[in-house]
Image (cartoon, rainbow, N blue to C red; front, side, top):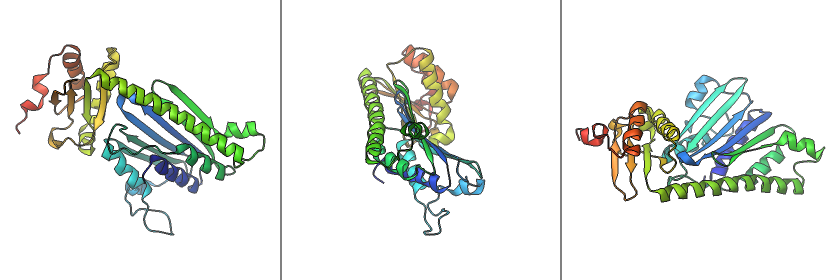
Length: 291
């Protein structure tokens, strides 16, 4: 799959095949943290705990027409390549939730593609069996919610497959997404010009070692102190797995300090001493490691 829109369409289609009558898609651009979070919630038939445990195996599928299910495994691999991850939770008879986290600045992150056309086509084809709530959100710009139940009510019986309605939905979804992308690009550009960056290793090794709470602690500490000119981004494997979680502070001139075996408390101290006061926490850096 060359675009994220195809991954989105694949998972939404799976939800409708699972008998869902309501599907919620959320596309959330958190530009301050260099994160794109795409989540799917449906009220379909759900999956057993055993199947959830192996659903990202490409050879795990409930289909009888073929023995390979590549949608979720490919999305999981993509998320992890960018420095993000994929989380799945489900209950039989209740529904499924899939949360995909990607790093937009990563060279491995695919473009979103024409999400508007993909959504409009699926919404129209399923109008009698399933409703869709689509949420576009940006951490600065705000949130927009497009609910097909409200649209149907206003259309008073007109089909969502009518050419005029289909084109309207395409444009509606596209405009909201384009606004989010433009705002995110502007924010990322502004932070890049500011110079200083904090980069958190968020490959599988880093996440397993506790990188997520470390990054959360950094973001929250910067926010508490009112620091807005420092970019916090994620990256893939840095190559020093046994020293994870790893955090790098990169100055405008390219000089870098690498912190190892971090935890939330060390992360807050790093912000206070290094970012605020300009004093490197020497006892936390890679210089203390036996390489």
